[in-house]
Length: 447
Image (cartoon, rainbow, N blue to C red):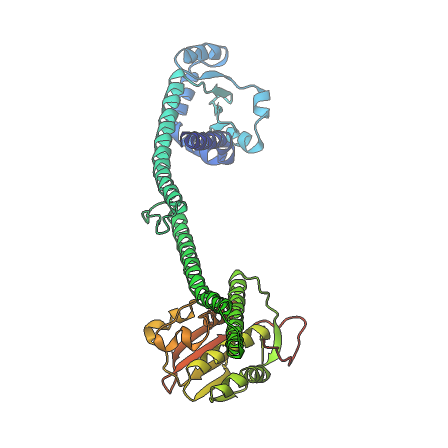
């Protein structure tokens, strides 16, 4: 702190000294006319006294009068020579001719016209008293400046120390630590930025912890089933019935392996989306063809559940710029989610508004989602209640993937109740700039 204070103080004092020198060197030449007029007014009586006094010493006695005058004055007096007058500019010479006092450009000399036509020259002399007063005055200014800087730096340094301690505590693992500074602090905005950063980091770490907990929980079940199935295979006996049981167990093991593979695939997809590792391939696509491709991909699931899927568009829905692969994946996840909970029907609808935004709606007639759970439904591994749990299928990652895809497009996804009481998911994609090379009408491939 002391080093920073000294640097700041030296910088301020150097700037102040430069300003004082600059004022002394430049102000008199810049404002010479104004200063000269002020000197004439201030020295009226003095000039009159000089003229009246020297009139008593005409001709050869002028030197005698100057000696008497010099003995009682700090200024140096002499009679101006022609060379001195020649150094004055035209306006100054004109003022002398008119009988006016003239001040030199540097403010150190002045010329007084006398009644006999001669000109008195006077040069100011700095006295020791003036020097001492200047030293005392500038010392007081330097001291006041030092006290002001010390006060300002102390408050500034105190707040920086608090912010530093908050950063140290946060780095030590106390994620709830926040910098608490007064609104009048000089670093209030910096503290707010730190607090916002800390909140984001804390949320990210908490999210990662919940993800790890969810991953561990999801992996335990298929791994336990695999271990149990392997143990049963190892303990199996001979005969046709034992072989049949082993075949069934092998089929169950294959299902568990596929379930593990699907879980890992979903986790990798979500991780890539969250890290921005999945590049967006924007192109101009036909919305109707996008809907048709999703309907074709989910048709078997709908048929297996004996459901009805109604798909259509409303209004002048034509083309939209997006990544068709990702948007189709999001719609497919929503449709597969609906097949798990719908009682009889699913509806997929697309429309555009006057601003060019695309709205994609997927709704079902299932049990719906309680209002208090609708915000958390998009979190990984989150399942609201018994009606939407692990046994209905899925890993709790599909809706999290939907949200990440929508955010990549700068849009939003919301959840409310459908007219039949089920869940209605609405994806809103804002209009995007059309890329340089377009694949107009290209239908996306849905995995």
